[in-house]
Image (cartoon, rainbow, N blue to C red; front, side, top):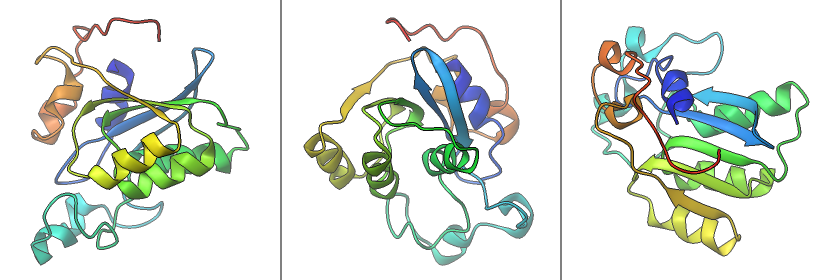
Length: 167
C-alpha cells in the first residue's frame, strides 16, 4: 500500500489523491492515479468542475474532468499491451461503480483497499462478480490514510506503513 500512496502523490486532483496498482504474481503490472486525461490542463490550474457545480463525493461521476486512479491503471496496461486478467488491484480507496465495472470486465480477481467510498452499488456488483474485496487498516502516519489532506502533505512518503499479509 505504501507504493499506492506514492503513486497517489502524483495526483493533481484538488479533492482527493488516489493511487492504484495492478499486481500479479508479486509483480507490478501497471499503476494509476487520479488526474485529467493526457494533454489537458490540470485541475490544480483550471479548477474543480465538481466544486464549481457543488457535486458531492460519490455522485455524478461523469461530471468531472479527471480519470480515476483505477481507470488510469487499466488504461495504462491496455496502452502498453499488458494483460491484467487474473490480477489484483491495490488502491488507496474502495472503487466507485465506474471503476468497479471496468475491473470486472478487465478480469481483476481481487481488490485490496484502505479507505471507504460511498458507493454501495459498486461493492454489490463486485461481490456478485466474484471479486474478492479486502479492506486493510494502516497506521495513521501512512500516506494512504492521508489522501484527503493537502497535496504537499499527501506527497510526504514514509516507510511506516506495514500491512500484514503476503503481497
